[in-house]
Image 1: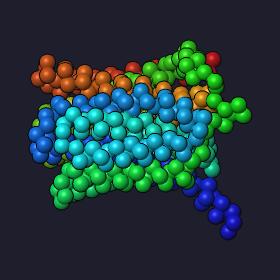
Image 2: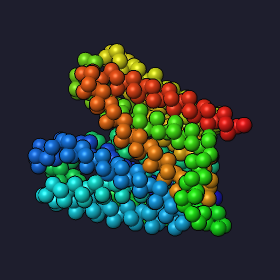
Image 3: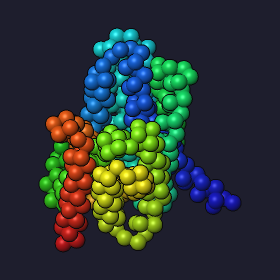
Image 4: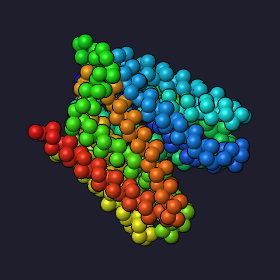
Length: 394
């Protein structure tokens, strides 16, 4: 009985991180997509203005990720999650702002800090260090819990907006995120550098050293191509399907199914890494996503369903696999800092993807180039990751 209780307590921080992940991603990422329309309709602020708020928040989160990772290495998760809790209070305050500029500044800053302090680059680094099992299994369990975020937040958010309006919905999400961050600061407070000397004294030197390593540089470039592709697909999957002839309701339902199918990819990671190295499993995941994106070109309902299943599972698998593969290659002494670097690169590429795809769609009047951009980016990621793995083995 004591041994069983010890196992349960050992997994406690991972469950706590999973709950924090759901509340943070829900408020700082998924919820915004369903809030834009109601905010535009009620406040009259342009969609370009509202979209720019989200883009700025992603850049703040991306560039703040390395700083948050550095703080994690030195102080552990408690301080990071306290910053996240303060940012969620900023989001709460933003919900009362009537002035567009004040709303934009508070919202973009709050969402950005929440992303820098609560996204997977932080939680997977902690899970890899404090988990009761291997880093791979601990990260997989964490991301499996996190996979419930999209299927829960999107429909619940829609119901809340319909019943109470967008401002009360933001307040509810902000308060839930605050609670998620506070519980993580208590139950998952560890995760600082395990080196007896702590993290390296010079963060910039640690970053330069990682980037000077050819296999790591290729791995990060592969992640950039993947970030470019995945963000493009997530933003434009519904417009692509509509462009190919599917009704908006059908396209939205298929997009929702894709989000749910991420859970299958997360669960399958444990079996995948038991049979092969994470880098190989990640290449298979990228290739599956490339095939899935091509299935959107036909406009056929059944092929679109295949896209939802295959792209959902591959995207779900890639999140823990990228973290596992990175942790196997990064210097453990500066893991938080380097995972932050990875998030910065992934986020910036993810911001460039939708902009590039939007420009090509405007120029050509078709979403077909969007599909090819996403597909070719994933194939490039497979090639670069293969080169990185070959160099590491040598």
